[in-house]
Image (cartoon, rainbow over all chains, first blue to last red):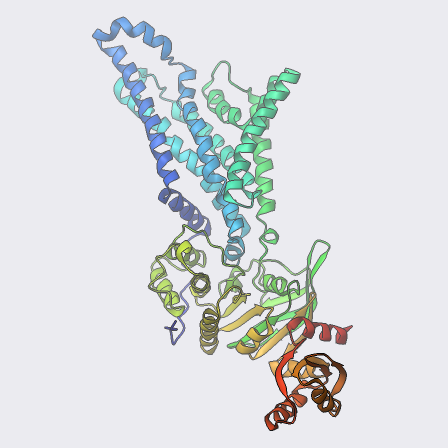
Length: 286
Length: 306
Protein backbone atom coordinates (compact mmCIF):
# COMPACT_ATOMS: atom_id res chain seq x y z
CA UNK A 1 0.00 0.00 0.00
CA UNK A 2 1.35 3.43 -0.85
CA UNK A 3 2.60 6.03 1.56
CA UNK A 4 0.89 9.25 0.65
CA UNK A 5 2.55 11.95 2.65
CA UNK A 6 5.93 13.23 1.57
CA UNK A 7 5.97 15.82 4.37
CA UNK A 8 4.86 15.93 7.96
CA UNK A 9 1.73 17.74 9.11
CA UNK A 10 2.49 21.02 10.85
CA UNK A 11 1.87 21.01 14.58
CA UNK A 12 -1.40 22.79 15.46
CA UNK A 13 -1.74 25.34 18.23
CA UNK A 14 -2.68 23.32 21.32
CA UNK A 15 -3.36 26.21 23.65
CA UNK A 16 -7.01 26.69 22.65
CA UNK A 17 -8.30 23.18 23.18
CA UNK A 18 -11.30 22.11 25.22
CA UNK A 19 -11.18 20.86 28.83
CA UNK A 20 -10.52 17.09 28.76
CA UNK A 21 -13.33 16.43 31.25
CA UNK A 22 -15.87 17.82 28.77
CA UNK A 23 -14.29 15.98 25.84
CA UNK A 24 -14.49 12.61 27.59
CA UNK A 25 -18.04 13.20 28.88
CA UNK A 26 -19.26 14.25 25.46
CA UNK A 27 -17.63 11.22 23.86
CA UNK A 28 -19.40 8.85 26.28
CA UNK A 29 -22.72 10.64 25.80
CA UNK A 30 -22.46 10.52 22.00
CA UNK A 31 -21.56 6.83 22.15
CA UNK A 32 -24.58 6.10 24.34
CA UNK A 33 -26.87 8.10 22.08
CA UNK A 34 -25.75 6.11 19.02
CA UNK A 35 -26.38 2.77 20.72
CA UNK A 36 -29.71 0.91 20.75
CA UNK A 37 -29.63 0.80 24.52
CA UNK A 38 -29.68 4.61 24.62
CA UNK A 39 -32.79 4.76 22.43
CA UNK A 40 -34.48 1.97 24.39
CA UNK A 41 -34.08 3.79 27.67
CA UNK A 42 -35.03 7.06 26.00
CA UNK A 43 -38.42 5.61 25.04
CA UNK A 44 -38.79 3.97 28.43
CA UNK A 45 -38.29 7.19 30.34
CA UNK A 46 -40.47 9.13 27.92
CA UNK A 47 -43.34 6.71 28.53
CA UNK A 48 -42.92 7.09 32.28
CA UNK A 49 -42.86 10.86 31.98
CA UNK A 50 -46.05 10.91 29.92
CA UNK A 51 -47.73 8.76 32.54
CA UNK A 52 -46.75 11.19 35.27
CA UNK A 53 -48.00 14.18 33.33
CA UNK A 54 -51.24 12.41 32.40
CA UNK A 55 -51.79 11.63 36.06
CA UNK A 56 -51.58 15.30 36.97
CA UNK A 57 -53.94 16.21 34.14
CA UNK A 58 -56.47 13.64 35.31
CA UNK A 59 -56.18 15.06 38.78
CA UNK A 60 -56.84 18.51 37.38
CA UNK A 61 -59.91 17.27 35.48
CA UNK A 62 -61.28 15.66 38.61
CA UNK A 63 -60.96 18.92 40.45
CA UNK A 64 -62.51 21.11 37.78
CA UNK A 65 -64.91 19.02 35.72
CA UNK A 66 -68.40 18.69 37.22
CA UNK A 67 -69.15 15.55 35.24
CA UNK A 68 -66.32 13.75 36.98
CA UNK A 69 -67.34 14.83 40.49
CA UNK A 70 -68.85 11.38 41.42
CA UNK A 71 -65.50 9.66 41.00
CA UNK A 72 -63.56 12.42 42.73
CA UNK A 73 -63.52 10.84 46.19
CA UNK A 74 -62.36 7.52 44.84
CA UNK A 75 -59.74 9.18 42.68
CA UNK A 76 -58.41 11.24 45.55
CA UNK A 77 -57.86 8.07 47.54
CA UNK A 78 -55.49 6.79 44.89
CA UNK A 79 -54.06 10.17 43.93
CA UNK A 80 -52.42 11.24 47.16
CA UNK A 81 -51.25 14.80 46.89
CA UNK A 82 -49.23 15.33 50.01
CA UNK A 83 -45.50 14.88 50.57
CA UNK A 84 -45.63 11.27 49.35
CA UNK A 85 -47.00 12.45 46.02
CA UNK A 86 -44.10 14.88 45.62
CA UNK A 87 -41.50 12.24 46.47
CA UNK A 88 -43.28 9.76 44.24
CA UNK A 89 -42.59 11.97 41.23
CA UNK A 90 -39.11 10.40 41.16
CA UNK A 91 -39.51 6.93 42.61
CA UNK A 92 -40.96 4.79 39.79
CA UNK A 93 -38.28 6.09 37.46
CA UNK A 94 -35.53 5.17 39.88
CA UNK A 95 -35.78 1.40 39.27
CA UNK A 96 -35.40 1.86 35.55
CA UNK A 97 -32.68 4.37 36.29
CA UNK A 98 -30.65 1.91 38.35
CA UNK A 99 -30.91 -0.54 35.49
CA UNK A 100 -29.73 2.12 33.04
CA UNK A 101 -26.87 3.14 35.32
CA UNK A 102 -25.78 -0.49 35.62
CA UNK A 103 -25.90 -1.13 31.88
CA UNK A 104 -24.26 2.12 30.83
CA UNK A 105 -22.07 2.89 33.83
CA UNK A 106 -20.81 -0.67 34.16
CA UNK A 107 -18.82 -0.33 30.96
CA UNK A 108 -17.56 3.21 31.47
CA UNK A 109 -14.19 2.40 33.03
CA UNK A 110 -14.12 -1.33 32.22
CA UNK A 111 -14.23 -0.63 28.47
CA UNK A 112 -11.15 1.55 28.73
CA UNK A 113 -9.46 -1.18 30.76
CA UNK A 114 -10.27 -3.84 28.18
CA UNK A 115 -9.06 -1.78 25.23
CA UNK A 116 -6.15 -0.25 27.17
CA UNK A 117 -7.28 3.26 26.39
CA UNK A 118 -6.16 4.79 29.66
CA UNK A 119 -2.40 4.71 28.98
CA UNK A 120 -3.15 6.48 25.75
CA UNK A 121 -5.35 9.06 27.46
CA UNK A 122 -2.77 9.68 30.18
CA UNK A 123 -0.09 10.14 27.54
CA UNK A 124 -2.06 13.24 26.51
CA UNK A 125 -2.30 16.32 28.71
CA UNK A 126 -5.05 14.60 30.72
CA UNK A 127 -4.64 13.89 34.42
CA UNK A 128 -6.20 10.90 36.23
CA UNK A 129 -8.36 13.44 38.06
CA UNK A 130 -9.73 14.72 34.74
CA UNK A 131 -10.45 11.16 33.66
CA UNK A 132 -12.24 10.26 36.87
CA UNK A 133 -14.21 13.50 36.98
CA UNK A 134 -15.36 12.88 33.41
CA UNK A 135 -16.53 9.36 34.21
CA UNK A 136 -18.20 10.41 37.47
CA UNK A 137 -19.70 13.43 35.78
CA UNK A 138 -21.19 11.35 33.01
CA UNK A 139 -22.42 8.53 35.28
CA UNK A 140 -24.00 11.06 37.68
CA UNK A 141 -25.11 13.58 35.11
CA UNK A 142 -27.02 11.05 33.05
CA UNK A 143 -29.53 10.04 35.78
CA UNK A 144 -29.80 13.67 36.85
CA UNK A 145 -30.66 14.82 33.34
CA UNK A 146 -33.16 11.99 32.92
CA UNK A 147 -34.88 12.82 36.20
CA UNK A 148 -34.98 16.53 35.52
CA UNK A 149 -38.15 16.51 33.37
CA UNK A 150 -39.81 14.22 35.92
CA UNK A 151 -39.70 17.11 38.36
CA UNK A 152 -39.89 20.16 36.16
CA UNK A 153 -42.61 19.09 33.72
CA UNK A 154 -45.23 18.01 36.31
CA UNK A 155 -44.37 21.10 38.37
CA UNK A 156 -44.79 23.41 35.39
CA UNK A 157 -47.97 21.70 34.30
CA UNK A 158 -49.43 21.81 37.78
CA UNK A 159 -48.56 25.48 38.02
CA UNK A 160 -50.17 26.28 34.68
CA UNK A 161 -53.32 24.24 35.28
CA UNK A 162 -54.05 24.98 38.91
CA UNK A 163 -51.72 27.73 40.02
CA UNK A 164 -50.59 27.59 43.63
CA UNK A 165 -53.29 25.01 44.51
CA UNK A 166 -52.01 22.37 42.09
CA UNK A 167 -51.06 18.84 43.16
CA UNK A 168 -47.33 19.56 42.79
CA UNK A 169 -46.05 21.97 45.40
CA UNK A 170 -44.68 25.26 44.14
CA UNK A 171 -41.55 24.59 46.19
CA UNK A 172 -41.20 20.98 45.01
CA UNK A 173 -38.22 21.61 42.68
CA UNK A 174 -36.32 23.30 45.50
CA UNK A 175 -36.63 20.10 47.50
CA UNK A 176 -36.45 17.51 44.75
CA UNK A 177 -33.54 18.89 42.73
CA UNK A 178 -31.02 18.54 45.58
CA UNK A 179 -32.41 15.07 46.31
CA UNK A 180 -31.95 14.16 42.65
CA UNK A 181 -28.42 15.49 42.67
CA UNK A 182 -27.43 13.43 45.72
CA UNK A 183 -29.12 10.28 44.40
CA UNK A 184 -27.50 10.74 41.00
CA UNK A 185 -24.02 11.17 42.48
CA UNK A 186 -24.63 8.06 44.58
CA UNK A 187 -25.61 6.12 41.46
CA UNK A 188 -22.72 7.52 39.44
CA UNK A 189 -20.05 6.85 42.05
CA UNK A 190 -21.29 3.30 42.57
CA UNK A 191 -21.34 2.63 38.82
CA UNK A 192 -17.86 4.06 38.20
CA UNK A 193 -16.35 2.38 41.25
CA UNK A 194 -17.82 -1.01 40.40
CA UNK A 195 -16.88 -0.61 36.74
CA UNK A 196 -13.29 0.13 37.69
CA UNK A 197 -13.10 -3.29 39.35
CA UNK A 198 -14.02 -5.07 36.13
CA UNK A 199 -11.87 -6.02 33.16
CA UNK A 200 -14.66 -6.06 30.55
CA UNK A 201 -17.85 -4.01 30.08
CA UNK A 202 -20.05 -7.06 30.71
CA UNK A 203 -18.20 -7.80 33.90
CA UNK A 204 -18.68 -4.13 34.79
CA UNK A 205 -22.46 -4.44 34.41
CA UNK A 206 -22.36 -7.54 36.60
CA UNK A 207 -20.27 -5.70 39.19
CA UNK A 208 -22.75 -2.82 39.36
CA UNK A 209 -25.84 -5.03 39.48
CA UNK A 210 -24.13 -7.38 41.92
CA UNK A 211 -23.10 -4.50 44.17
CA UNK A 212 -26.55 -2.92 44.15
CA UNK A 213 -28.46 -6.15 44.65
CA UNK A 214 -25.83 -7.63 46.96
CA UNK A 215 -25.83 -4.59 49.23
CA UNK A 216 -29.63 -4.67 49.25
CA UNK A 217 -29.67 -8.36 50.15
CA UNK A 218 -27.08 -7.82 52.88
CA UNK A 219 -29.08 -4.95 54.30
CA UNK A 220 -32.25 -7.04 54.29
CA UNK A 221 -30.45 -9.93 55.96
CA UNK A 222 -28.94 -7.77 58.68
CA UNK A 223 -32.27 -6.02 59.22
CA UNK A 224 -33.98 -9.38 59.65
CA UNK A 225 -31.31 -10.62 62.05
CA UNK A 226 -30.93 -7.53 64.18
CA UNK A 227 -34.24 -5.75 63.73
CA UNK A 228 -32.34 -2.44 63.43
CA UNK A 229 -33.96 -0.28 60.75
CA UNK A 230 -30.83 1.82 60.28
CA UNK A 231 -29.00 -1.01 58.48
CA UNK A 232 -31.27 -0.34 55.50
CA UNK A 233 -28.82 2.47 54.82
CA UNK A 234 -26.51 -0.16 53.31
CA UNK A 235 -29.00 -0.53 50.46
CA UNK A 236 -28.17 2.03 47.74
CA UNK A 237 -31.61 1.70 46.11
CA UNK A 238 -33.35 2.62 49.34
CA UNK A 239 -30.88 5.46 49.93
CA UNK A 240 -31.62 6.93 46.50
CA UNK A 241 -35.34 6.79 47.21
CA UNK A 242 -35.00 8.06 50.76
CA UNK A 243 -33.47 11.40 49.77
CA UNK A 244 -36.57 12.80 47.99
CA UNK A 245 -38.74 11.49 50.83
CA UNK A 246 -36.57 13.16 53.47
CA UNK A 247 -36.32 16.47 51.67
CA UNK A 248 -40.06 16.79 51.00
CA UNK A 249 -40.86 15.65 54.54
CA UNK A 250 -42.61 12.29 54.10
CA UNK A 251 -43.84 11.01 57.44
CA UNK A 252 -42.31 7.55 57.22
CA UNK A 253 -39.34 7.58 54.87
CA UNK A 254 -37.67 4.31 53.88
CA UNK A 255 -34.56 5.30 55.84
CA UNK A 256 -34.23 7.95 58.56
CA UNK A 257 -32.14 11.11 58.22
CA UNK A 258 -28.94 10.10 60.05
CA UNK A 259 -28.58 6.60 58.52
CA UNK A 260 -29.30 8.06 55.08
CA UNK A 261 -26.60 10.71 55.41
CA UNK A 262 -24.07 8.25 56.86
CA UNK A 263 -24.94 5.47 54.39
CA UNK A 264 -24.75 7.78 51.38
CA UNK A 265 -21.43 9.23 52.50
CA UNK A 266 -20.00 5.76 53.11
CA UNK A 267 -21.14 4.46 49.74
CA UNK A 268 -19.76 7.47 47.90
CA UNK A 269 -16.45 7.35 49.75
CA UNK A 270 -16.05 3.62 49.15
CA UNK A 271 -16.83 3.65 45.43
CA UNK A 272 -14.92 6.84 44.65
CA UNK A 273 -11.88 5.57 46.56
CA UNK A 274 -12.00 2.32 44.59
CA UNK A 275 -12.29 4.23 41.33
CA UNK A 276 -9.39 6.53 42.25
CA UNK A 277 -7.17 3.58 43.10
CA UNK A 278 -8.10 1.58 40.03
CA UNK A 279 -7.65 4.41 37.54
CA UNK A 280 -4.22 5.54 38.74
CA UNK A 281 -1.57 5.69 36.02
CA UNK A 282 0.26 2.77 37.68
CA UNK A 283 -2.83 0.64 37.03
CA UNK A 284 -2.92 1.74 33.41
CA UNK A 285 0.18 -0.16 32.44
CA UNK A 286 1.12 -0.42 28.79
CA UNK B 1 15.82 15.50 23.75
CA UNK B 2 15.74 12.50 26.11
CA UNK B 3 18.05 12.00 29.05
CA UNK B 4 17.96 9.48 31.86
CA UNK B 5 20.20 9.87 34.86
CA UNK B 6 20.18 6.68 36.92
CA UNK B 7 16.42 6.49 36.40
CA UNK B 8 14.76 3.38 37.80
CA UNK B 9 11.21 2.10 38.06
CA UNK B 10 9.75 -0.23 40.66
CA UNK B 11 6.33 -1.90 40.70
CA UNK B 12 6.12 -2.52 44.43
CA UNK B 13 8.79 -5.12 45.18
CA UNK B 14 9.45 -5.82 41.49
CA UNK B 15 12.19 -3.88 39.75
CA UNK B 16 10.96 -2.92 36.27
CA UNK B 17 14.00 -0.92 35.30
CA UNK B 18 17.37 -0.81 37.04
CA UNK B 19 19.11 2.55 37.39
CA UNK B 20 19.71 3.51 33.77
CA UNK B 21 21.49 6.43 32.18
CA UNK B 22 21.58 7.44 28.54
CA UNK B 23 20.93 10.41 26.30
CA UNK B 24 19.25 10.76 22.93
CA UNK B 25 20.10 13.93 21.05
CA UNK B 26 17.71 16.41 19.42
CA UNK B 27 16.55 16.17 15.79
CA UNK B 28 15.12 13.25 13.90
CA UNK B 29 16.23 9.68 13.62
CA UNK B 30 15.01 6.31 14.77
CA UNK B 31 16.15 4.64 17.96
CA UNK B 32 15.37 0.98 18.54
CA UNK B 33 14.56 -0.21 22.01
CA UNK B 34 15.47 -3.85 21.88
CA UNK B 35 14.96 -6.57 24.45
CA UNK B 36 13.04 -9.79 25.13
CA UNK B 37 9.76 -9.82 27.02
CA UNK B 38 10.24 -8.50 30.53
CA UNK B 39 13.41 -6.63 29.62
CA UNK B 40 12.06 -3.28 30.78
CA UNK B 41 11.11 -1.75 27.43
CA UNK B 42 7.57 -0.89 28.46
CA UNK B 43 8.82 0.41 31.82
CA UNK B 44 11.19 2.75 30.02
CA UNK B 45 8.37 3.86 27.71
CA UNK B 46 6.12 4.52 30.71
CA UNK B 47 8.80 6.76 32.17
CA UNK B 48 9.40 8.63 28.92
CA UNK B 49 5.72 9.12 28.12
CA UNK B 50 4.99 10.52 31.55
CA UNK B 51 2.71 7.72 32.69
CA UNK B 52 4.75 7.00 35.79
CA UNK B 53 7.36 8.92 37.78
CA UNK B 54 10.76 7.28 38.19
CA UNK B 55 11.24 5.43 41.48
CA UNK B 56 14.75 6.85 41.59
CA UNK B 57 17.00 9.05 39.49
CA UNK B 58 15.80 11.54 36.92
CA UNK B 59 14.04 11.41 33.56
CA UNK B 60 14.04 14.43 31.26
CA UNK B 61 12.25 14.78 27.96
CA UNK B 62 12.66 18.10 26.13
CA UNK B 63 14.59 19.22 29.22
CA UNK B 64 11.70 18.63 31.64
CA UNK B 65 10.36 15.81 33.80
CA UNK B 66 7.56 14.24 31.72
CA UNK B 67 5.37 12.87 34.53
CA UNK B 68 1.99 14.69 34.37
CA UNK B 69 3.70 17.55 32.57
CA UNK B 70 1.40 18.94 29.85
CA UNK B 71 4.29 20.87 28.29
CA UNK B 72 6.07 17.59 27.54
CA UNK B 73 2.98 15.49 26.79
CA UNK B 74 1.80 18.00 24.19
CA UNK B 75 5.00 17.37 22.20
CA UNK B 76 4.90 13.61 22.49
CA UNK B 77 2.97 10.94 20.56
CA UNK B 78 2.52 7.46 21.99
CA UNK B 79 1.44 4.28 20.21
CA UNK B 80 1.00 1.68 22.96
CA UNK B 81 1.29 -2.04 22.38
CA UNK B 82 -1.73 -4.04 21.22
CA UNK B 83 -4.44 -3.46 18.68
CA UNK B 84 -7.65 -4.06 20.60
CA UNK B 85 -10.03 -1.23 19.89
CA UNK B 86 -13.76 -0.86 20.72
CA UNK B 87 -15.16 -2.91 17.85
CA UNK B 88 -18.27 -0.87 17.09
CA UNK B 89 -16.52 2.47 17.26
CA UNK B 90 -15.67 4.37 14.10
CA UNK B 91 -12.02 5.27 13.73
CA UNK B 92 -12.67 8.92 12.83
CA UNK B 93 -14.79 9.46 15.95
CA UNK B 94 -12.10 7.94 18.13
CA UNK B 95 -9.47 10.09 16.45
CA UNK B 96 -11.58 13.20 16.99
CA UNK B 97 -11.72 12.52 20.72
CA UNK B 98 -7.99 11.87 20.89
CA UNK B 99 -7.32 15.09 18.99
CA UNK B 100 -9.49 17.02 21.41
CA UNK B 101 -7.68 15.43 24.35
CA UNK B 102 -4.39 16.49 22.78
CA UNK B 103 -5.69 20.05 22.99
CA UNK B 104 -6.28 20.73 19.31
CA UNK B 105 -8.87 23.51 18.89
CA UNK B 106 -12.17 22.44 17.34
CA UNK B 107 -11.62 24.63 14.27
CA UNK B 108 -8.27 23.03 13.49
CA UNK B 109 -9.23 19.47 14.31
CA UNK B 110 -10.70 18.36 10.94
CA UNK B 111 -7.62 19.57 9.07
CA UNK B 112 -5.25 17.96 11.60
CA UNK B 113 -7.21 14.72 11.39
CA UNK B 114 -7.16 14.73 7.59
CA UNK B 115 -3.40 15.37 7.53
CA UNK B 116 -2.62 12.61 10.00
CA UNK B 117 -4.85 10.14 8.16
CA UNK B 118 -3.23 11.05 4.85
CA UNK B 119 0.19 10.55 6.39
CA UNK B 120 -0.66 6.98 7.37
CA UNK B 121 -2.59 6.32 4.14
CA UNK B 122 -5.99 5.90 5.78
CA UNK B 123 -7.79 9.05 4.63
CA UNK B 124 -10.45 7.15 2.69
CA UNK B 125 -11.07 4.43 5.30
CA UNK B 126 -11.31 6.32 8.57
CA UNK B 127 -15.10 6.18 8.55
CA UNK B 128 -14.98 2.40 9.03
CA UNK B 129 -15.59 0.85 12.44
CA UNK B 130 -12.56 -0.81 14.01
CA UNK B 131 -14.27 -4.19 13.72
CA UNK B 132 -14.03 -4.09 9.93
CA UNK B 133 -10.37 -3.06 9.85
CA UNK B 134 -7.35 -5.32 9.50
CA UNK B 135 -4.63 -5.35 12.13
CA UNK B 136 -2.40 -3.24 9.91
CA UNK B 137 -5.16 -0.67 9.38
CA UNK B 138 -5.82 -0.44 13.09
CA UNK B 139 -2.12 0.04 13.73
CA UNK B 140 -2.04 2.87 11.21
CA UNK B 141 -5.03 4.52 12.89
CA UNK B 142 -3.20 4.28 16.20
CA UNK B 143 -0.22 5.91 14.56
CA UNK B 144 -2.45 8.64 13.11
CA UNK B 145 -3.69 9.27 16.65
CA UNK B 146 -0.12 9.86 17.78
CA UNK B 147 0.56 12.19 14.85
CA UNK B 148 -2.56 14.36 15.18
CA UNK B 149 -0.89 17.08 17.20
CA UNK B 150 2.39 17.02 15.29
CA UNK B 151 4.66 15.57 18.00
CA UNK B 152 8.42 16.04 18.12
CA UNK B 153 8.91 12.66 19.76
CA UNK B 154 7.04 9.55 18.68
CA UNK B 155 7.15 6.46 20.91
CA UNK B 156 5.92 3.12 19.60
CA UNK B 157 5.70 0.03 21.79
CA UNK B 158 6.02 -3.21 19.80
CA UNK B 159 4.32 -1.73 16.71
CA UNK B 160 5.14 -4.69 14.47
CA UNK B 161 3.51 -7.37 16.63
CA UNK B 162 1.03 -9.39 14.61
CA UNK B 163 1.56 -7.50 11.36
CA UNK B 164 2.06 -9.39 8.12
CA UNK B 165 5.33 -8.77 6.20
CA UNK B 166 3.77 -6.25 3.82
CA UNK B 167 2.21 -4.24 6.62
CA UNK B 168 5.56 -4.28 8.45
CA UNK B 169 7.35 -2.87 5.45
CA UNK B 170 4.70 -0.18 5.02
CA UNK B 171 4.97 0.80 8.68
CA UNK B 172 8.78 0.83 8.51
CA UNK B 173 8.68 3.08 5.45
CA UNK B 174 6.28 5.36 7.24
CA UNK B 175 8.49 5.60 10.31
CA UNK B 176 11.50 6.39 8.12
CA UNK B 177 9.50 9.15 6.43
CA UNK B 178 8.60 10.62 9.80
CA UNK B 179 12.19 10.41 11.04
CA UNK B 180 13.43 12.08 7.86
CA UNK B 181 10.93 14.86 8.52
CA UNK B 182 12.57 15.67 11.86
CA UNK B 183 10.54 13.56 14.29
CA UNK B 184 12.59 11.57 16.80
CA UNK B 185 11.13 8.03 16.70
CA UNK B 186 11.64 5.53 19.51
CA UNK B 187 10.52 1.99 18.58
CA UNK B 188 10.53 -0.98 20.91
CA UNK B 189 10.70 -4.55 19.70
CA UNK B 190 11.95 -7.94 20.80
CA UNK B 191 12.96 -8.92 17.27
CA UNK B 192 16.52 -7.98 16.32
CA UNK B 193 15.86 -8.26 12.58
CA UNK B 194 13.03 -5.74 12.66
CA UNK B 195 15.05 -3.18 14.53
CA UNK B 196 18.15 -3.79 12.44
CA UNK B 197 16.13 -3.07 9.26
CA UNK B 198 14.73 0.10 10.68
CA UNK B 199 17.14 1.99 12.77
CA UNK B 200 20.54 3.53 13.05
CA UNK B 201 20.71 3.38 16.82
CA UNK B 202 19.87 0.70 19.38
CA UNK B 203 19.31 0.57 23.11
CA UNK B 204 19.61 -3.02 24.28
CA UNK B 205 17.70 -3.91 27.45
CA UNK B 206 17.71 -7.16 29.37
CA UNK B 207 16.11 -7.96 32.73
CA UNK B 208 15.58 -4.30 33.49
CA UNK B 209 19.14 -3.30 32.63
CA UNK B 210 20.54 -1.32 29.75
CA UNK B 211 23.14 -3.74 28.35
CA UNK B 212 24.38 -1.93 25.30
CA UNK B 213 23.85 1.31 23.46
CA UNK B 214 25.05 2.22 20.03
CA UNK B 215 24.65 1.59 16.33
CA UNK B 216 23.79 -1.82 14.91
CA UNK B 217 27.41 -2.45 13.66
CA UNK B 218 28.78 -1.50 17.06
CA UNK B 219 26.55 -3.97 18.80
CA UNK B 220 27.31 -6.65 16.22
CA UNK B 221 31.02 -6.15 16.87
CA UNK B 222 30.31 -6.62 20.52
CA UNK B 223 28.62 -9.91 19.70
CA UNK B 224 31.46 -11.08 17.45
CA UNK B 225 33.56 -11.82 20.51
CA UNK B 226 31.24 -14.68 21.33
CA UNK B 227 31.06 -18.09 19.64
CA UNK B 228 28.12 -18.62 17.30
CA UNK B 229 26.73 -22.06 16.50
CA UNK B 230 26.21 -22.96 12.84
CA UNK B 231 24.81 -26.18 11.40
CA UNK B 232 26.28 -27.13 8.02
CA UNK B 233 24.30 -29.84 6.23
CA UNK B 234 26.30 -31.85 3.68
CA UNK B 235 29.02 -34.55 3.60
CA UNK B 236 30.06 -34.70 7.28
CA UNK B 237 33.70 -35.76 6.93
CA UNK B 238 34.52 -33.20 4.23
CA UNK B 239 32.87 -30.48 6.25
CA UNK B 240 34.71 -31.53 9.42
CA UNK B 241 38.06 -31.50 7.56
CA UNK B 242 37.40 -27.94 6.37
CA UNK B 243 36.17 -26.82 9.79
CA UNK B 244 39.22 -27.94 11.78
CA UNK B 245 41.44 -25.82 9.55
CA UNK B 246 39.60 -22.65 10.55
CA UNK B 247 41.31 -20.62 13.31
CA UNK B 248 37.94 -19.35 14.62
CA UNK B 249 36.66 -22.86 15.40
CA UNK B 250 35.81 -23.38 19.07
CA UNK B 251 33.69 -26.56 19.02
CA UNK B 252 33.02 -29.19 16.35
CA UNK B 253 30.27 -31.83 16.49
CA UNK B 254 29.83 -34.33 13.67
CA UNK B 255 26.24 -35.42 12.98
CA UNK B 256 24.64 -37.82 10.49
CA UNK B 257 23.58 -35.09 8.07
CA UNK B 258 26.55 -32.77 8.54
CA UNK B 259 28.38 -30.89 11.29
CA UNK B 260 27.61 -28.32 13.98
CA UNK B 261 30.43 -25.86 14.51
CA UNK B 262 30.83 -23.20 17.14
CA UNK B 263 32.93 -20.32 15.82
CA UNK B 264 34.30 -17.06 17.12
CA UNK B 265 34.03 -14.01 14.86
CA UNK B 266 31.40 -15.39 12.48
CA UNK B 267 31.78 -12.27 10.35
CA UNK B 268 35.27 -13.42 9.40
CA UNK B 269 34.59 -17.10 8.84
CA UNK B 270 31.37 -16.70 6.86
CA UNK B 271 32.96 -15.07 3.77
CA UNK B 272 35.55 -17.90 3.70
CA UNK B 273 32.77 -20.48 3.98
CA UNK B 274 30.93 -18.77 1.13
CA UNK B 275 34.07 -18.80 -1.04
CA UNK B 276 34.75 -22.49 -0.28
CA UNK B 277 31.19 -23.44 -1.19
CA UNK B 278 31.38 -21.39 -4.40
CA UNK B 279 34.68 -23.07 -5.33
CA UNK B 280 33.20 -26.53 -4.68
CA UNK B 281 35.75 -27.30 -1.96
CA UNK B 282 33.08 -28.33 0.54
CA UNK B 283 29.65 -29.81 -0.22
CA UNK B 284 27.20 -27.67 1.78
CA UNK B 285 23.49 -28.18 1.17
CA UNK B 286 22.31 -25.76 3.83
CA UNK B 287 23.57 -23.45 6.56
CA UNK B 288 21.52 -22.73 9.69
CA UNK B 289 22.66 -20.40 12.42
CA UNK B 290 21.46 -22.05 15.62
CA UNK B 291 21.91 -19.29 18.14
CA UNK B 292 21.77 -16.00 16.30
CA UNK B 293 18.37 -15.24 17.78
CA UNK B 294 17.92 -12.45 20.24
CA UNK B 295 17.83 -14.69 23.29
CA UNK B 296 21.32 -15.97 22.51
CA UNK B 297 22.54 -12.42 21.96
CA UNK B 298 21.21 -11.42 25.33
CA UNK B 299 22.71 -14.46 26.99
CA UNK B 300 26.12 -13.55 25.60
CA UNK B 301 25.80 -9.96 26.66
CA UNK B 302 24.52 -10.93 30.07
CA UNK B 303 27.53 -13.17 30.60
CA UNK B 304 29.71 -10.21 29.65
CA UNK B 305 28.03 -8.00 32.22
CA UNK B 306 27.93 -10.65 34.96
